[in-house]
Structure formats: C-alpha cells, structure tokens
Length: 424
Image 1 (cartoon, rainbow, N blue to C red):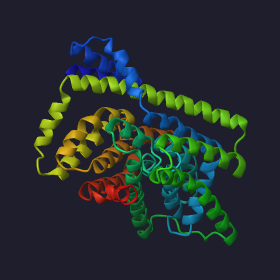
Image 2 (cartoon, rainbow, N blue to C red; image 1 turned 90 degrees about the vertical axis):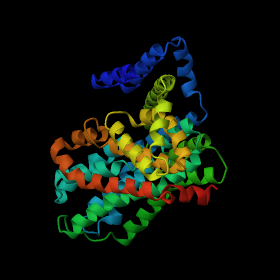
Image 3 (cartoon, rainbow, N blue to C red; image 1 turned 180 degrees about the vertical axis):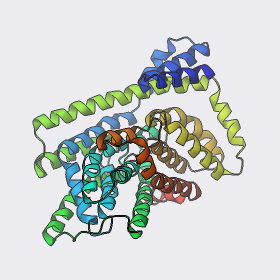
C-alpha cells in the first residue's frame, strides 16, 4: 500500500493532473496486488456506469447557462440591496450572495471566481482592506458545494447508496450554518467598529424589483428539490428540468443570453463534465486497488478504537478530511474514501447523513487552506493579493467554520432533521 501512496502523492506534487495521478496510483496498486491489469479497463467503465451520474452534466449546464445569462450579477445586486443598510453591509452581502449562488453553481471555485471579481474589487473602495475582502469571499465560497443542488452530493450518493434527495435536504442547514458562522465574524468586526458605516436602505422601487428577481432565481433549487421530495421526478430528471428553467429565465425573462452564449455554456459544461467523469473513473481504480490491499480492514480496526464514542470518531474523520482536502481534489476524496468510511460509521451507530455532511464540509474547508487550496489561489489571482496577508484575515473565519463542524459532529439533527421531516 505504501507504493500506492508514494505514486499518488509523488505525481500530485509533480503537478500531474489529479485524475491521471490517482489513476496511475491505482494501476500500481492493482499491479502490487498481482491482479491482471486487464481488469483496469473494466473498472474504468463500471466506475461511471451509474444512472445517478447522468445528473451531473445537467446541473453543471444549468449553472453555466444562468451564469452566462447574467444571473450572477443579479444575485450580487440582490444581496447588496438586502444588506447594505447594516454596518459591514457589503461583507454581509458577500456572504448572502454566496448562499444564493450556491443554489445555482454548487461549486466553491465557481463561487469564488464569479463573486471575487466583484467583491474583492469593490469592497476596498468602500473602506475594507483588500485581505479582508478576499477573506470573506474565500470563507463564504465553500457554502457552494453544500447547499443543494450539489454536485458533490450526487457523487456521494453514487458511491454510498444514499438517497440524492436526502443528501440535498441534509445540506441545507449545514450550508446555512457555515454562512451564519461567517456572518458572526463579520458582525463582531462591525460591532468593534472595524468595518465601514451603513449606507441608506434601497428605495421602494428597487425593493420590489429585488423581490421579483430574487424569487425568480430562488425558484430553481426549490423546483429541483421540491419535485424530488414529492416524488415527481428523479435527480437526473430534475437536472433536465433545471436546464429548461435556466434557459427560460436567461433567454425569455432576463434576456441576458443569445445563441452564442448558449453554445459557450454547452461547451464549457461538456468540458467540465468530461473532467468529472475522468476523475470518477480514475478514483474507481484507486478505490478498487486500496480494497485489494486491505485498507478497509485497517479502517475497521481503527474504528474499533472508538467503540462507544461515535462523536470522537466523527471528529477523527473531520481531521482526516481536513488534511486530505489540503492536497486532494474534493471529488476524488469522496469517491475514494467515503465507501471505506461508511461501514464503520454504521457500525458505530452514526447516521450516514451526518457523517456525509461532516466529510463534505471538512473537505470543502480544505479548498481554502494551503498548500493546495484551489479556492485560495483563485481569489489570490483575482484580487492580486499575497497568501500571508490573506491567511491572516481568513483565520477568524476558518475558526468559526471549524466550530460549525464540531457542532455538526455533536448535534446530528442539524443534518438529519430536514430529511426526516420532508422525505421520511
């Protein structure tokens, strides 16, 4: 097993793309296990041969269409109008825009890239420091993969056997909890007088327009999750409906996209989807190799050390995912490690939905921490800011988000209440 780890980590640090690095590491594992290498071709195919995975391109395409159609700009405007009357209002608007954008993009990187271009540029003009502006953007961006519709939830459902609907519902409260954690930090800074003064509230006309546009955009996740909860359609069919609704809003309501824009959205969604499928196939090989080499029994033996202490096991999982998230792609980590962790999770009486939320959030936090925090580098590039000042400003937000993770470990109802209530 040591050769698999050396191969995978070595290739990652050499800059080899993640899918190829973990695929080659899996190939080494199959070879070490003395299994015919021909099995690799079969495993590559079976890894993506899942009906649930058909949903992924639809949600990616819906997000791309709404982004090309100017929906992102409207979400930012809505958030700014809603919060600008508060001290530190633009910082709150940044967090609110991330919550709204999460219901469309489902991606931390997309959130950071789209919102960073606006907030990291505009907030310093109002008196915020550039590191603080970037820190709020980075910290709130990880809400994107948690609040439904979430591409990570679909990947997790495919490898765990859990319901996509349950995972979507389970992500609502934890996602809002992350937003609340960031808002608490901003509120404390505002009360200490460190943030700019409030600006006048918007006029009646702008409020009416804000409400209309907000309802139109917010209807998308409601349609997706609501229809799935009602049993009207599956996650994959819901993705198709999301695409149709995104085209309707972007073309006929907001009139922000033309045929050329639609073509660009389709092409970008196709490239992103192909990348994800390649990653899924490669992760399947590595997971298969690790199982051949006995990692599952090792994890079960480690879990026995936590017998009768499920909270400690959850905290241990959170710590492991935090470390993995700093250098491993979040999708790959889910595909490789979730199938290995779920059996001991069930043996210890932990609700799989609670464990899933802990895994997703801690891996997402890894996206904003060095040495390989993808979101961190996106915002550094957008804002033209160094890592050290950004990390100083980001630290209070990370502490608040880690406190939210601990709360999720201690209170399972935060993850399970909505699924039990709406999809019993």
